[in-house]
Length: 101
Image (cartoon, rainbow, N blue to C red; front, side, top):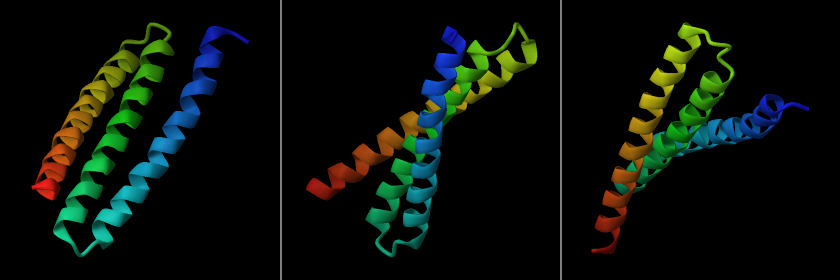
């Protein structure tokens, strides 16, 4: 088994888990009647989605076969994933701060 195949076997389950978490937190966020809980679940959804997009971008960048299109798609996914991750972390910390005080 080559290193690229091993990388796929490691990253693919992580992508599936973060996909399930994104859907789960999205559902909880939309069904919640409490605005604070809705915001916290939305932030968790953004974090999960950001991590998922980052791992997808890693697969695209390492499995690119020197294809410019795949590298560009991987870079776009990485930027969007980082944005979602940091926005989710910022929102989650803001909601936790209002929860404490």
